[in-house]
Length: 334
Image (cartoon, rainbow, N blue to C red; front, side, top):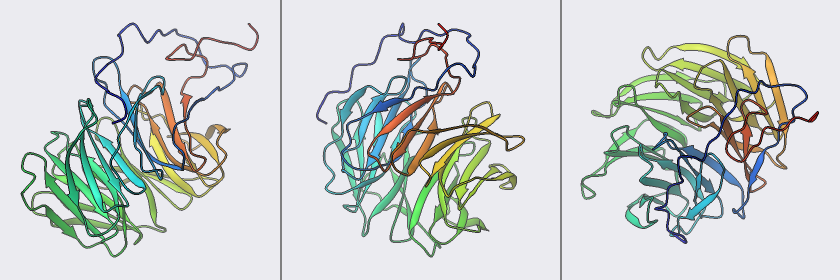
């Protein structure tokens, strides 16, 4: 890594106040530069010692680690020789994983930036995710295969999950059980797998190729985007809970931890926020200069991050006007 990343911020960093959102207060996103090509994926860590971290994947091949509350750059993981499509942080934000076009998934020490191991594939790797106990890593590639690697035994043969008929887009462990992997691919399906046996549990046909997959903070819900649709699923019953139509082709969606709202973004450059119960559009903002590839709420729900074709990632306040991170309490009428 081009900078050591073992320094954690101090705990007096996050002042807050109970300012209510008002139409007189403008949304002022924080732009995080650094990448030289489109930013395609984001992953927030869990809250660690009152703070959290954000890792980004970019076609420039240089995944970056940032302080989640501010977007301040911490370090860049150096080693891939192609576009990076997927990134993940483990539960304590001490390890990272990346998926890239150089046919590698790399496992990193997130404190020093050093490579711990690289897992070779036979095609472009698109996605990585840690199990909740941090002992396993699932990957998905253009081979149309999922692999589950043992992070305590690099030499062990991975479990291979086969069945998708298109390139894998994303795969995640469902951490309410840690025994199920959910995956989406360019075959218009959502699939659930038994991570122990590798057997397919359920296949769900979708109306379009799915573009994103996210598990809620409590592990009870799955958010999926495809076409102009965002749908929500119960991770215990694997049944659909809700579904909404969005004004644009959606590339990514994220559910707030209180499950009262969700954000999404896609081809029209906008970030949308909707009410989860009614589907009513609450807000929309146009700050990016290219399609939005990924959106993610922070683990405390105070902000959401967006990644775009324009090469930037931006941080947006969930409640506009609240004093948090780099945002000050600022009203237009003050």
